[in-house]
Amino acid sequence: MSTIEIQSNQASAYKGHTVRLKGHVMAVRNMGNLAFIIVRDGDGTIQAVADKPEVMKIARELTAETVVSIEGTVIQQPKAVEQMEISIDRLQVLARPKETLPIEIAKSSKVDGLALTTMLDYRPLTLRSEKARAIFRIEAEFCAGFREFLGSQRFVEIHSPKIVSTGTEGGANLFAIDYFGKRAYLAQSPQFYKQIMVGVFERVFEIGPVYRAEQHDTTRHLNEYISMDLEMGFIDSEQDLIEMQTRLLSHMFERVKENCRRELALFQAHVPKFIEIAQVKLSQAIDLLQSKLGWSGESGDLDPEAERLLCQHFAGETECDLVYVTHYPRSVRPFYAMPAPAGTDGVELSHSFDLLFRGLEVTTGGQRIHLLDELTASMTSRGLEPEQFNDYLQCFRFGMPPHGGLAIGLERLAKQLLGLPTVKLASLFPRDINRLTP
Image (cartoon, rainbow, N blue to C red; front, side, top):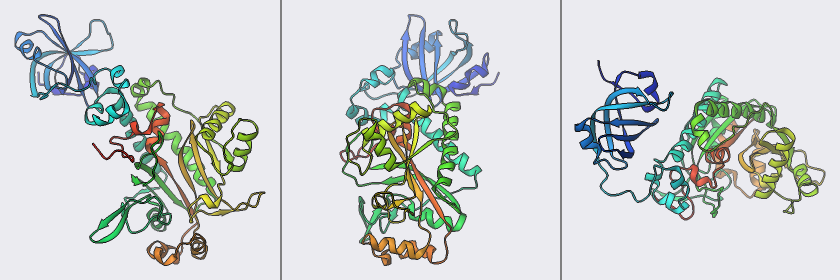
């Protein structure tokens, strides 16, 4: 019988077959003339049983994270009807650790007990742990769902430059770099490019890193994160964007629920299910917070406590963990935000929104100004010189449809879904004001 190379999650389909599996040793239990070896591969873990003398000789020398190749027969575990194991005929060591592991990663309880600094200092190792792996498998499914849904809605994936000559919001919070003797910056967002590409494809999206030189060191901030952006043309208002994102997120969550059952169970995570998401204007949200929810913050914007209180309130009313906050003042939105009629207090508003998920903003978006004269006037009112944005304005000089877009923070979405204590755990190798390695 020929040997079939498999992954751990395929074992049940090959009961009675001779297989080969490669991975890392997680643990070894020596029982005299018998040894049980737990092996981790890219898709999970499996138990292998050594009882042949030539195999036992090698098994007794195995240590955690030794890289091995196992050949043997897939059999059913005696005490677990639905679980398979491999009876080893041949055991080959492919690589041995040069030293003892500085931390224990085989047990989730041990990894959960690590200090954040330790978790991140040993990131190449801690990422091998079961729960850390689960986070990034879920993020991969979010990205796959994002691409899958938008592709079905005529969106085209683009890849915009991350080295730019100017900021999307007039130069605030930018990382400056030397570009062959010229001043350049790391992109804050793909905003200008995705707007330009609306004039090409009408509907575009991008998944990629963005950079914010913000002096924050909190559980919700990163200086480099993955942004999931979309921009769509020929819209009537920001409501078209909200409707599109509601269906998009529903699809993404359902994909994660279907494909990541084991990973979600590790965190006891509840995946939200919804058809619609409640909306509240910012001014109404502040009135609600101050009059009924006991919030004593400033009236201009929502702080973390306000976001948490709002989500709790609407979850109680709608049984949905998400809520849109709309109509932010123009003064706190970028120059390209489409103006909306002023509020009763005379404050100029915008057709923009944030989406809150379990107490944290995960999306910012809105309708954009698409007429050249209005866009340049908005720039000038912010103290910006339109001449410095000539490349961006080129598409508006030759006609742009009404359009808008949004951006979803991938790490924040995962953090809130899994109840992680900090967004840094949802980043492979987080970058904040204190960390540039590993």
